[in-house]
Length: 132
Image (cartoon, rainbow, N blue to C red; front, side, top):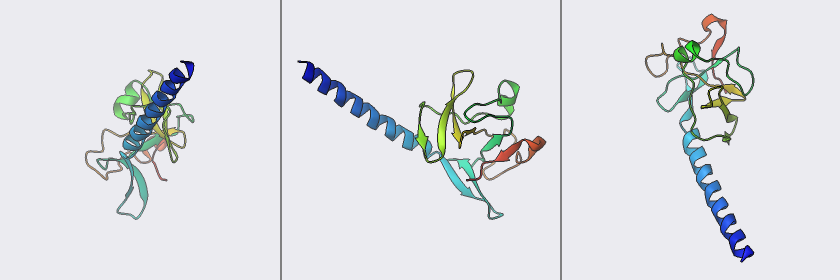
């Protein structure tokens, strides 16, 4: 009877892992590399909106909270512990999940009104487009 229960647990864990892997790939595919007009490459969301990193963030931790996060909304993730290429998911101070590139959390910029805009790049000398 123990073997049957163990087999059942193993199958359940395997199915859960496969479902999580499928979700990871689907979620990750919403972050894409976008060729820019100047020939540069930057990461964007699926809608073509530019993604940014903040110099005050530490690897795996965002320091853009409160008012900062209202201007620079975090790029949310749905599943903790995902890893795809150089992209990972971190947990923010408020417990929400956020995508990161090489440990640097992604944010959007509320002043970018349409796909391909990079108006936040270099802002205050602390915000930068994400270049793979």
